Each structure stands twice: as structure tokens, then as C-alpha cells.
Image (cartoon, rainbow, N blue to C red; front, side, top):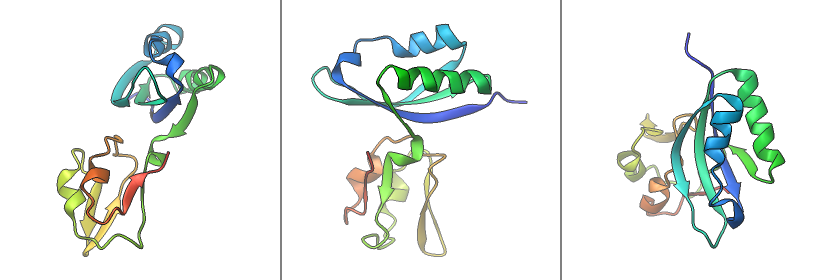
Length: 135
């Protein structure tokens, strides 16, 4: 049986950029940390997309620890949003998505937030600006 996992987005102020947070999580909680998306600079707020894998209780403890450090934690799906009124189902975003989180069925576009790695490629590719960052 595979280990439980949880994908989250961390939003943090610039003072956390040089802190080895993922290493702390590994050492304190014995979890596997997969970084799947990041936008980090030393002079502004950054975000880090991570997947925590391991014991379910330890994952909850790690998320609580991260929050206690003053870092905002959001579920992965909150990073990317789609305005269905602006979307014309052109399909440009489908070919851009590296993990097939956007797909078309019966000529309608759908978004699977569980597959999304919050890379932002779909945001840049949408000619109608129907996909945007939901931070």
C-alpha cells in the first residue's frame, strides 16, 4: 500500500528564502518532500509547491509546523483558477499542460487540481486570460 501524500503550496515572505525548510521537514517528521514548483527570489514573497509523502499523522504535524513558522499553506488547487465565463474552450492550454491536468471532454475544458503542479504554463498560454493565479 503506497504512503499517503499531500500536495500543498507554501507562500512565504522573503526572510524564509534562505531557510532550509524542506530539510527541516525531512529531519523532524521523516517525510519525503518532492518540490514540484517554485518561484523564489530574495526580495519578494515566494511560493513553493511541495508534495509531502509518508505517515498521515506526520504529514498533518508537518503542515501545522509550517503554519506555526508564519508561512501560509494552501491546498494545491488554489494556485490556478479558471474563469468559465471568459473561457471559450479553445484548447490551447491542453497542449501546454505538462501533466495533463487540463483536458477536454465533449468540447468542454476541465481542470483537475489534483494533477496540477502549479507551473503556470496555462496562465501564460491562455489567449483569453481565462486562467489566472488564484493566490
